[in-house]
Length: 300
Image (cartoon, rainbow, N blue to C red):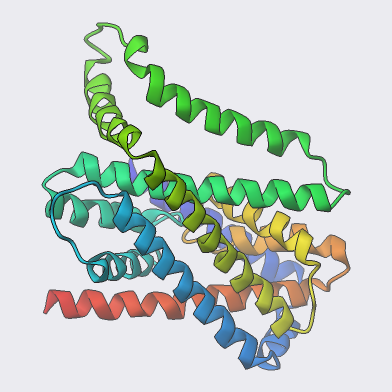
């Protein structure tokens, strides 16, 4: 089954890339890439690094343990996870490796999963808030779906934390599922005693996502187009969140396709849009090589 899922995601990435290459003049995109401003490309690289640094810091403080685990350990693991995203399906494939290694460190895969999931979840909350603010300032976009989705997501999470045990019932078929949910719920319940930790982590999530958005925004500057900043704070989070729903390998194909759909309405040439998207793939890949270096060193 895992092989079939991976094959599906590879096929979808290939089909989307083939569609873009055959539909548009990629040689023009290549020329735009070659003539792009390297200063902005370097800035995008640094923004992604800052994104990972603050993400690792947020992740560290969400791990509730008496063990003394250094920030450096979390930072290395975060970069290594980004390196594995190059080979594992979806943009969160590297999280499986991070949960595995942190679980070994904590002697609890459940606590490792909880902290990693909550770190991701708070990041998604920040993305949704940025999207909603961007929608409010960009009046041509309908608000209803995004606002409703945001409210339902937060409400569902709160209900799970507060009322999950009341939903349980005895059934042989569901006992295995409930036993897993019990562990996750018990881990999340520990955060009730530290609400200030959640608030600080949420605040850091806005910093993380700000760097994520700006790492893409500056690449449009690199190819000679100044995006409206309000539209950027709407479009980039939605593109990122859509990556969870569209099967692909580390956003290859799906990101490029969504870039074209979101930014062609601004009057940007498709070849320029694809050049910015390719530069973002390249920037993320180069940053992830830092994780590959850490992985090799740790193996030695």
